[in-house]
Each structure stands twice: as C-alpha cells, then as structure tokens.
Image (tube, rainbow, N blue to C red):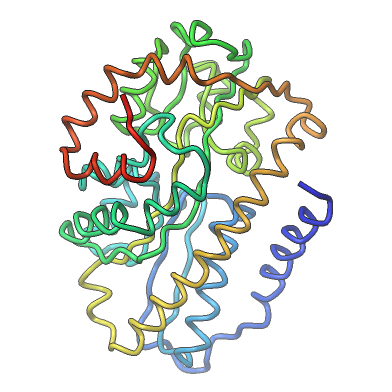
Length: 336
C-alpha cells in the first residue's frame, strides 16, 4: 500500500463528509422517508458510502425520497436491526451474511473458513450464481436484496495475551464471535472457546476480559478502537465477509418505480466505491497496526488450520445442501 493510495482514501472520505453540508433538504417535506441502520462507525467505508447514497438519492429524486442513517448500533445491535428490517420498523439495513443466516440460512455460506483465496474470488462468487441464490432466499423472507454486496473483508484474529501462530495456540482461547452459529462452529472445531457477543458490546467484553480475543477485518480494528484493548494481530484471513444491503420489501414496493430505480442504482453504484475503499483501508491498516498502534503483527501459515476443518466442511455441506455447496466449490475448488 503506497502513501498516495492511503492519501486517496483519506481524501475521498473527507470529501464525502464535506459534501454533507452542501446537500440541502428541500423546503417541502419528502414524500418518502426511509431509515437506514448499520453497526459500523462514522469513519468506516460502509458509512461513508451510505452517506453518498443518501445524498445522491435525495438529489436525483428532487427531495421525494429522504434517507436518515443510523450508524454505530444506534438502533440496537445487528440482531435487533435485522428484525426491525423484517417488520418494517427499519426500511434499510446493512448486515453481514452471518446475521442474515438466522432467517435465511444460506446467507451464512460466506463464513466457510478458509474458503476464499482473495477478494476477487469472493466477489466473483457473490456477484454470480452463488450470490443470486443467496439473494433469492433472503428475498423470500421479506426483503429486497440489492444485487451487489458491499465488502467487509477478510477477518483476522487479535488477542490480548499471545499471538496465534499455530492451531494449538487457539486451544481454549476465549474469543468473541458474532452471535452466529457458523462462527461458533468454526472456532469450536479449531479448539477455541467462542463466545457470541454483539458488536456493540465487543470493546467492553475485551476490556474486562470476558473474552481475550476477537476476529474482524482490519478496518473494524481501527474504527472500533480495538487496538486499545488488544495487543496481537495474527493475519489468518480465516473468513471473508460482506455486507448485504436490504430494503424491507413492503417499504420498497411502496415506492413509485422511478424511486425504486434511483435507490437501486445508488446502492449498486456505491457498492463499487465501497469495495475499492475497503480494499485500500484494510491493506493500509495492516501496516498501521504495528507502526502507529504498536500492535504485534504476525503472518500465519493457515494450511494446518484448514486441514483441521474436514469435519466442519462435512457438516456445513450437509447443512447448506449439495446445490449451494456445489456453487461455492465452483468458485473456490473442492473443500474437504
């Protein structure tokens, strides 16, 4: 990651926040008002691009569709926002695949450990047939799922007590995971003691040693300031995760066709911007964790980790079914 690349990302983020002041609400009230909830912080690329969507939709709709964004778990944690988006209390929601899996199980397939080699491979899968299958199941549960997922990124393990270098280092480790079955199953198979905790409670749980470790992309380490309560970063890339952006189906269908098109176009357009900025952010932060935040960063040989997951792969194949598993293996190769 070059200094100029980091500068471009910072400049783009600053420009976005600066643009907020220049987008004025029309004098008359909007015809439609949508609330959008998500769990990330104000400086996370998801929120930065959500603001871009909000501004573009307001401008293109000539004030007819206004979006109010509620970042950083303001409306409750992901499980709460998920339910609100189904009930219609929340019109728009951005959540990772694992959280949607509690309602649409196939959405959890992104969490198969060590499946994806790089982001391009993962995006090809979820922009393609596998993603279409996930969206179809999600849409059957009361959402309209926008076609292009936004990126969260590859996940790394951090701890306050020791680096993770070999599989044995995970034995008995109290690690925070999202409140999602596939995460718990993965880390149990690797020998750890996973503890599901909502993102809104993660910092405190680490600070008070309810858990000693967690796993997330680099950008989350910075935006949640986890470097203050963690010492070691082990680069495992053990999972790739995205954000599915959804609208409550009834709310979306209440919009006239032109407003549906404006909203869908903006969501898909800024998915591409989000992807670029997340890649820049995660790449630059790998170096920043050690240089600025004084964390100890180590690279991990993950082959022995993956080898231990054969029983996990067999169970997940049975859970997801042959059709979904075949679509996954079409993108990543045989998992066994």
